[in-house]
Amino acid sequence: MVTLDTRTGEILALVGGVDYKQSQFNRVTQAKRQPGSTFKLFAYAAALEKGISPQKTYSCGGIRWQGQAYKPCERSSGETDMYGAMAQSENTIALQVAREAGLNSVVNVAQRLGVKSKLQAVPGLVLGQSETTVLEMTGAYAAVANDGVWNRPHAIRRILDGGDCTNNNDWRTCREIYNFQTDNSARQQALSPQVSRTMTRMLKTVISNGTGRAASVGLGEAGKTGTTDRAVDLWFIGYIPRKNLATGIWLGNDNNSATKGSSGQAAALWGSYHRP
Image (tube, rainbow, N blue to C red; front, top):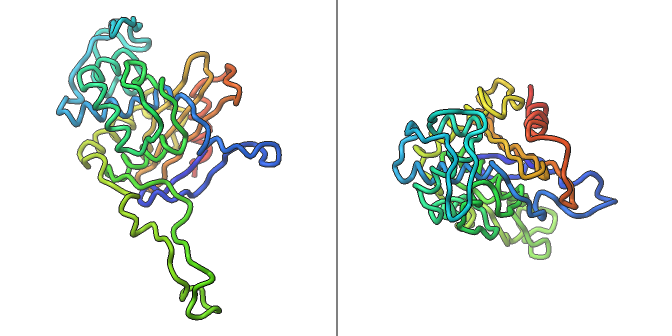
């Protein structure tokens, strides 16, 4: 799990494993995992950028795309709009939305929001097929919380040269080697504020009446659940706008074996962590 300051991208808390003595592998920064439905964020944002209304309705029926058959809605029926589809994490709607927006546009949005991992522009991308890191995904959600301004997640603000100081007894006189604030590559306006605010309203429905109810803490939080095949990966990524906090939680096994849980457990853990 990792918590970021949504205004700056600063890492406020990070847990990369159970015991550093047993394993030095950092599951937040190094592990590449399938993000499941948390990736739908980029499909819906791409559609909004194209001017597609979030109130537009889509059929809950199954679809075929690029030779692959996808099942109908699991929790909805008839037709539903983006709000309902996001809340209930309906795959067929997310796929239809992505098809209308264009897969390359979905990839482009994800990359602008800080996903550096390799992404394949195929239908399965929308459902979280391409592997990413917890830090990348949490940074993307933090940017949405920050009116679309992406700040590279970071743990270092400044670096000073301790061997090059005017006064060796005062660190403030040391030569500055790096400053995050002056690093132009560390931030960008990835989404418009309008698209970001619509996405936040959409993600709030996930918690108020959707698959992420277990994450509810009563602070206006927004977020998304994610589960991969056989419950190998369990995710919840969310943010609290008024507190400027974004937290991503992943649960799973290093050997990619199935778990016996659901993304509801990740959501419940997120809620316990943020509950006042």
